[in-house]
Every structure is written in structure tokens, then in C-alpha cells.
Image (cartoon, rainbow, N blue to C red; front, side):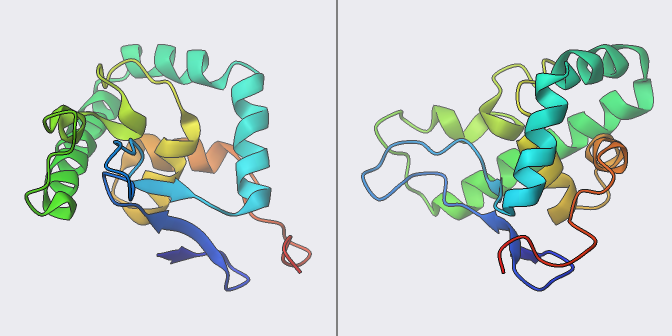
Length: 143
């Protein structure tokens, strides 16, 4: 679990299957209400499309995403501990945010959460840097 600067959970690590066995595509889940709102605004302003275009023209960011996708898949298999669920395990091989095509971004929330949990993820770290401030500076949004 990653905490916000105010000490509350900001990112949680999720099991690849929920209690009923259904796949849960997001391994790292953004939980801070302020951060979720900030990312939602970025998405509403065309952030997914803009970052997808940036990804297409920046080989170093593509490499970062490819590495993070491998980490995501390895982590999901590890967390599954041999369980494959009704999907036969296919969801364990999905990319960040449940993407079947990792080079096609679909959820900035998942990339931000992955970057907060794994700061070496350059693409996510650049997205986070653009979301200034990701966390409220004047106190916790949950208090």
C-alpha cells in the first residue's frame, strides 16, 4: 500500500480475482479521492489520447511501458497463487488497467497508481508530474 503525504492509503494492491472469482483488472488501485478527481479531469480533457500520442513518438516511454507490462503480468500471476478463475487465467496476462494492447492506453488512473507503487515506471511518472498537485497541499481531502 502506498500512502498519500497525509498518511492515508493512496494506492492499494488488488488481488487479480474478486471474492466471487471474477477478474479484477487493476493490480494497483488509486484510492485517494483527490487524486482520483485530478486524474479524471485529465482524462476528460483528452489525457488518454494525448498520452497515447506521446507514447507513439517516445521510444523511451514505450520501453518503460513494455517493462511495466512485464512486471504487471508477473505480479498478477504471483498474486493469483495458482488460481486461474473462470477466465482460464487470460486476465493475468493483461497490461496495466486490464489493457489487452498495452500500447493503447485506456485508463490514466491505473498508470498513475502503477507509477506511485513503482516509481521506476517512467511513463507513469511523467503522467504524475503533469498532475500537479496530485495530492492536496492544504491538508488531507478525507479529513
